[in-house]
Length: 90
Image 1 (spheres, rainbow, N blue to C red):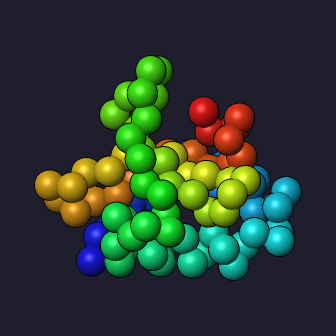
Image 2: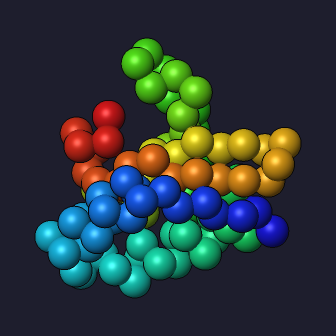
Image 3: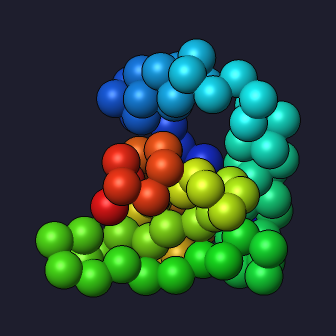
C-alpha cells in the first residue's frame, strides 16, 4: 500500500473541484483508492509530465478529468498536487 499525503492547498483545490463537478465524486474516490493500492494500475493511465511540470505525474479520473501528483516511490508516498480537467491541471 502507498500513503496518500494531502496538503491543505490540494484539499482546497479538491473541494472546489468536487463542488463544481459533484457527478465525479464517486469516480474521484475510486481513483484515490486505486492510486493508494496500486498507482501503476492500467486504468489510472499514470504517466510522467514534462516541460514546466517535470517531476510530476498524472493519473486519470476519467477521460475528462485528471489528478497531477508527486509520486515518491522510495517512501511509497503519493502527494496529490492538483485536480481538474486537462487544461486546468496542465
